[in-house]
Length: 195
Image 1: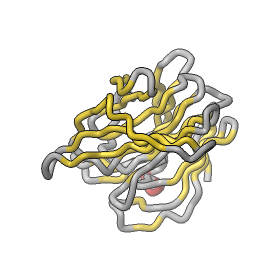
Image 2: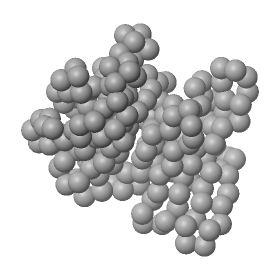
Image 3: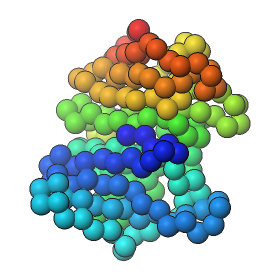
């Protein structure tokens, strides 16, 4: 799920029912320390994992997803990709090579196909919405870059999901936050884009 300026994102471990919500302690105007808030959906208890902190620079523009194969929460923002488990805490992970997006992208996992997809976003240096798509094979831990969308279908703040081998993105903006995106995009992880 994506987290923009309006709120925080969360992800759930379907095996345990635990919900993971990154939380932040603001240090100053440019940085914060991140921990994680864990809610057990079985008995509604909650706790903050104070044992593991990670220093962040932009606390509200990230994506987080749970991957069943890795048994980890994957967290990405403009500074990199990280994994989290209650046992290991935060660890650096290898993000997609050639990632141009600094924020506003979506990330989603497929339980059955062992894939993680990171799509779209915004490039501060280029001042454009992006249509880049990256697929992580969690069995080999290798990233593959797929073909970008046509430029008019680039997305900033998209909502996304995976069903079998179909990645689906819809909503939010394209073209530098000026045009509301009406088309639903579908990417077959084995082939390419369609509308």
